[in-house]
Length: 135
Image (cartoon, rainbow, N blue to C red):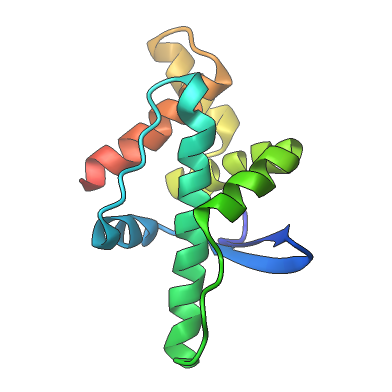
């Protein structure tokens, strides 16, 4: 299993992403809705999820350091994802596995048993279930 503390580099700065189920709380407290209904909108949905993971990491760090400032935006994540498609695809898989507790291979196999789907459909379905169950 992956470490829930992941890192990406934006504008030469290493940024922390804390990918844990507490992402739901971050989104709920802020009124954020993250939806992925099709393969076409999975990318923006996961950008929002990674932004929530950055906020999650910041909130945990701020507990020990109340003076810590958060200077990352969703736009920063969107630009990073567009410029780093391969890294973004890897991060989607890492996030999916961390939040589900299953490997992508196991998730795809489970989805295939239900119906014939692509890997991105399986990931989209998992993202949708993650937020619907907690909503």
